[in-house]
Image (cartoon, rainbow, N blue to C red; front, side, top):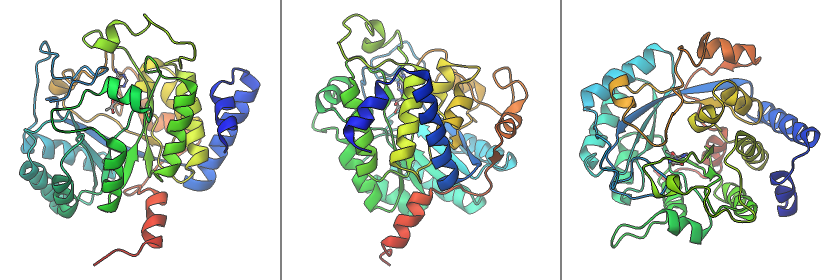
Length: 354
Ligand code: 5AD
């Protein structure tokens, strides 16, 4: 899809035209990754963070937030829960926490791999390449690292660097791919100062990086962050809306650009429309859901943004359970690890070094 077409879709407001985008994305999804919806058990293993990202409630300067770090035993208990629920993957996610040491994470990965057949996805921020290599060698399968925006100016505004450590997530994604990880990335939609042109660039980057997983969600202002306090104060002319519809547009276009990628309907999307967000995401390109398996006592403190929807097996927000919802969409729950077909194709094309 060329850039003009991308921009045309991103700025499209005609409901009938948009309906045709949803239909096209849904049919490409069906042809390339089928009707299975893969469930990934999400474990938010630490809320400590050394960074000061302007949008995120976990930022280090937010001293009002009581922090936690799960023990290996706590993590493994949740992993067993994922197995009982029939999931094929656990995702270990955290703030950028040096307290999660290379050896601690290595040990956790090895124990998960020894006890279960689960795929392990890491989402632990920008870590040292030697750590990323050690975790891959210990058996980690996938790494998620959103670049949030490909616009250098906006990126550096919202991601103050640590002293002596320039932040370049796009470069790190290339290194993760070279280490043999399945790589996932994505952006927030509606960051203050983000234009349609920026989003078109982001989508082009998804294709260029040959992403295996693409997660996008609307920016949700958090009052304890700089961007949450003045989100709408100085709107620019081409400001992208932080809406459900914009998020669905980006999901649908991501599906057309990277037809074989795994694309989740994200918690942030479920948060901006609690009744229909997940379902719409799954009908407009999505094929993955990441239910939160973090124990309740910790989950409340993983305060990335306010009023975070909790996607669980059952509960008030999914009245008759996630599974029934999925079946009602005419889809079925994925079996097995749900590896990205994009990754499997790449592995076949590039014989592994032994
Ligand atoms: N609104 C929406 N998404 C957010 N994230 C962080 N803060 C916010 C926010 N205020 C997203 C980022 C990050 C992911 C784990 O959560 O994209 O990569």
